Structures are given as structure tokens and as C-alpha cells.
Amino acid sequence: MLENGFRPLPDGMRDLPPEDASIQRYVESVAARVMDSWGFTEVIPSTIQFNDEVSSGPGKYIEAKTYKFSDRRGRVLTLRPEMTVPVARMVATGGWSFPAKVWYRGSVFRMQEDRSSRPHEFTQVGAEVFGLSDPLADAEIVAVCADCLRAAGIGVFRIGIGDVRVTNRLLEQARLGGEAVTQALEALQRRDMVLLKGILGDAGASPAVIDRIMEWLRPIPLREAVESGILEDDTCSCIRGVVEGLRSFDIDRVAYLDMSIVRDMTYYTGMVFEVYGKGIGHAVGGGGRYDGLLERFGISQPATGFALGAPEVAELIREQGGTAPRKSVTLVTASRGTASQAASLARSLRARGQRVRFDGDPVSREEAARRGAAVGATSVLYVTPAGCEEVCGEPGLPGVAWAAWLARYSELAGIH
Image 1 (tube, rainbow, N blue to C red):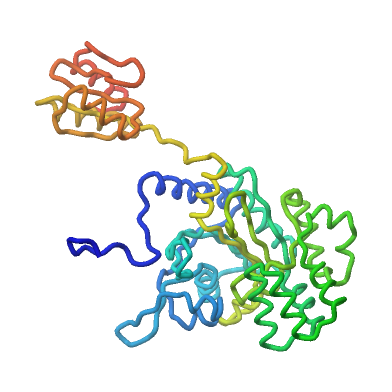
Image 2: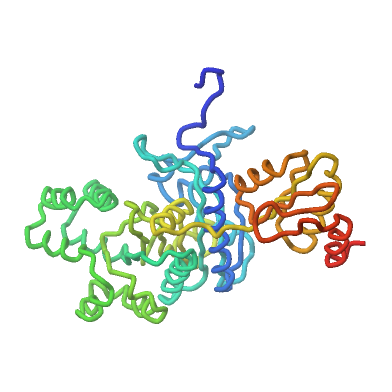
């Protein structure tokens, strides 16, 4: 608590100053354009959900990280910790026709580890395909995700492709018991292969079996996997169609097979993937197939989807030397006694489609220029009783009578 008694933000919460807000909105707007180009329809699910919906969806691992509270009837509610389950409920209970392709953007709330610097509230953008079981739908979801990153100006990223069926088959070879399986999956989530080998050994797996499992869990570039013939092995039969689809979408050059990928949601039933970028130590986003989830809401439909964390994408943009495109703005200022004329000028310029900030308090030319620099204005117009001049930016209009100047712009704007 600060000295004046004002409390700082709760753990894991943060404000976004202009630069951070700008780049996050840029990520969202880029994703919106990509989703629209692929023909996906936007949906906005409720922020507040029943807690049992979360516990029956992502599972106990995510439920333990949720923000819970009660309503006036004593029912346990939660702030959504992810978007897939609320969107699936929406589609399953809304009488939709299938196949359905939707996308979303919005805040999710998830408590992180005490030592983690990751926010507890963050924006996700993502897409879901309901009603298609073809592997090409999985490949399409990966391709849409990749398009979002490219459109944001991210040129260097990698996509790891796994499959929970393959991973489960590998662990079955070690004949792990129930608790050992949970421990093994947790080790994979943490990417702790040393711990995993210890768990397999403690369960009685032979060195030969452990070596085989570890070899299968080794990441391998997708094109190399295709050329090596590894996909012809029966162990990988379930993912061959997805790989072919990725090749048709030209994603194979940035993808690799990684059967060690274990997502932290329990609803995945097939292909899973994660996106990584240079300079960030954790996944930027990911997704996969979850064919059983809609059954929990009363209908049976296959589904696949992905989500990107907007803060991670923004961080990746910065790491690769990018930023949000600068928006041009004209600052209109006034000298003493000219506030009404300056306001009319600002209105006229907005009518012409320009982005205009208006400061109506009387200032000097020097102060007008200072304010323009402070807000990054591309042009600063200073209104005086004698006319209007441009104190910075492109060569302006010094000496032009105010009435004639405003009349010219009013005529162009259709204002009389």
C-alpha cells in the first residue's frame, strides 16, 4: 500500500500505457483482418461462467488457477480462464448449423505462479472450427494462426506439431500406472526430459524402451520427417493427414514434429500444436483438436481451434524490431480568443477524414510545438486572430486569412 493509503493493482494485474495499448490493439486488428479473410465469423462469449463449466472443460489444472466468486444465489462463478469452452458452449447451445467457423478476442483471467512475471489478465485472439473431422481442418487452423503472425510482421517463428494419441501410445509402452502417467505428463509440460526419464525408469521401463520413447519425443523438422519416412510408422499414422494438409498450406517449412507437446487443457483428443518465437521462453499460443468437448453441452460434433496470447505476440513483435504502425494525428491549437475558430477548424478537418486532436486552451506558438512533439503529431496548426499557421510538420499556411482558409476547408468538407 502506498503512503497515501492508495492500493496498487492486485497481483498479476497491470495497466497498459499508450505504447503497450497501441501494439496490443494492433495485434487484435491484424488478427481480425486475417480471420475475416479466411471467412470466420466473430463471436463474443460472456466473461463470467459457471465454475462447473470450467472444471468439466479445461480440467483441474486450469480450474486451480481461476478467479472464483459467488452470485446472490450462492452459485460458484468464475472469470473465464480461456476462450474455447465458452465458445463451444455458445455454439453447442445456440442452434448453429455445421460446419461453423468462428473467431474471438477478449480478456481471460488465470492466476500464474508466484515468481512468474506473466500477467493474470491477458487478451487472447483465436479461432475454432466446429463440425469438421477432416485432418485438413486441423491444418487450416494452424495455417490461420501462422497467417496472424505473418500479418503482424513476425518473420521468425516455429510451430511444433504433436498428437496426444501418439504421446499416450508412447507412455503406454512404459506400462505406467495412473499416478506415474500424471507425473510423466507434468514433466512433459515443464519440458523436463531428465525428470521424465527418471519417472519411466522408476516405473520399470527397460533402457531400450526409454530410449525408444525419448527418440520419438525428439523434435524433428517436418520436411525432414517426411523425407525420412518416419510418418510411415504405425505410431504416427494418425497425424499423416495433418502433415499433408500443412504441406498444402505451405506451413511445413516453419513446422516440426514434436510429440513431447502436452497442452495444459485436458480436452484435447488429437493433433496439438504450439507456436514459439525468438526471444520468448514460452509458447506464444497453440491449440489442437478436441472432438469430445461439445458432448458436454449436449451435442456431438468434432472441433479444432487455436488461441494466441496478445501480450506474447506483442512481445515477439518488439523482439524482432517491430512496432505498431504510427497513426498520423493533426494537433489544432489556439491563441488567446480563438478557441471557437480552432474548434471549427478541427471539426472541418475531421469531416475530411483526418485524425485531429484539439487543445482549446490559449497557448503560445512554442507551447503548441512542444505539445505536438509530446503527442507525436504529424502537423500542428496554430490559430490566431489573423489566420492559421503550421508551427511544425510540412510547410503550412502562415499569413493566410483565417476566414478564407477555413472557408476553403469547409467547402471541401461540404460544410456551409
